[in-house]
Amino acid sequence: MEIKQLAVNDAAPMDLLLLADPSQEMILSYLRRGICYIVKWEHETVGVYVLLETRPHTAEIVNIAVAAAHQGKGIGKTLILHAIRLAKKLGYYTLEIGTGNSSIHQLALYQKCGFRLNYIQHNYFSKHYKEKIMENGIHCVDMIRLTMELNEIS
Ligand SMILES: CC(C)(COP(=O)(O)OP(=O)(O)OC[C@H]1O[C@@H](n2cnc3c(N)ncnc32)[C@H](O)[C@@H]1OP(=O)(O)O)[C@@H](O)C(=O)NCCC(=O)NCCS
Image 1 (cartoon, rainbow, N blue to C red):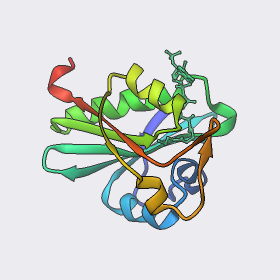
Image 2 (image 1 turned 180 degrees about the vertical axis):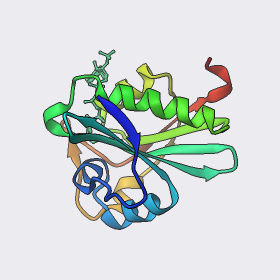
Image 3 (image 1 turned 90 degrees about the vertical axis):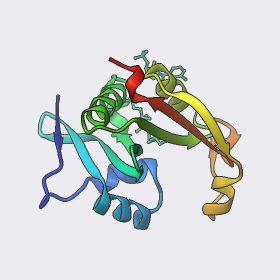
Image 4 (image 1 turned 45 degrees about the vertical axis):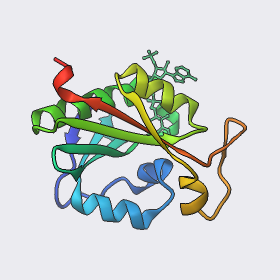
């Protein structure tokens, strides 16, 4: 498994990015401003994340995705730990990530990686997405925001 920064002339793996964010317009917008890393497995791109500066000293993992056939093998966790080390190396104080109230797997994964629950953006998904989102039998309406203070990790 090889994690590398997407080269300037390389196309981003849009099929993977769309697994985490249904808005291609949003994806193209933050790809232009953020840093994109991909993970290769036997020459195939199987994972991606995008790190974006959102405020002074603060970065956010705005997209993270692993190809369906490769999920559950630890690639997502490896990418998050990579993003944490990168954000710290780049000098950010705080790293953030957000997910839906129905995203049980993601909430478990992010907390296992050291993120703490911060606040809730009530009705975020019902306001910003036209389609009703159902996941794990739960209506996804709120965005759960998680945060990590990078000076607290070694
Ligand atoms: C979210 C995603 C990136 C995770 O990637 P992944 O490679 O499948 O995740 P991993 O295999 O690294 O799993 C990491 C951990 O989550 C844990 N986990 C998964 N489901 C869990 C659950 N229901 N309860 C508790 N822990 C769970 C795993 O046990 C593992 O922890 P461990 O290493 O301590 O055993 C991937 O599922 C994905 O691309 N999903 C679609 C896109 C998406 O939702 N992106 C995030 C948008 S917010």
